[in-house]
Length: 224
Image (cartoon, rainbow, N blue to C red; front, side, top):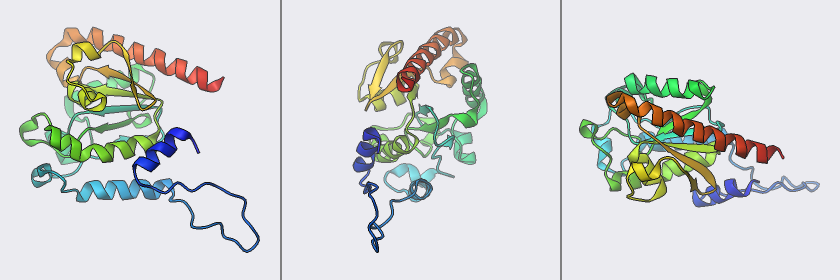
């Protein structure tokens, strides 16, 4: 088993079974949980979650969407009004802009994995509180473990600060490659900000080019 995946599974409290040569009359012990069952369990837990007060006002939980084996993982801050209604992250105008940027990388929305730091909408679309992000952190960690992305894009200040455990402003986090438990992470403007500040799209495009270079280098190293 890949050492990074093993670390994640251990952090999640999941028994990681090693394949061994079966003996005659020996079933080899209980089978490992299959990936689909792990996803179902995770989605069900999120749907029932009452770890913080955000569950009181939600319409639907918003766990994530996309390819569960994607190389690219986009992590935003929290669902908004439309996301809360539809149960899908990054819909509406901001979602359409995100889709455009994903296409600029040569992918479609369904070929990447998209999620948020928190899975329920904060009232009035306010920023998630630290305790709310902390309550959802185990879910996000499990998602990352299951997807095993080659690169993470932190979409916006809140996502970047939570993933990197820092209070540094976005201006200091952008334009460089960070490390999230062995996975390269690039910080990117939130599409909602880009809609309000169109000139920043040029910088956002530079961030995407940086992410693409890092991804290609990582794939080249993996391919030997």
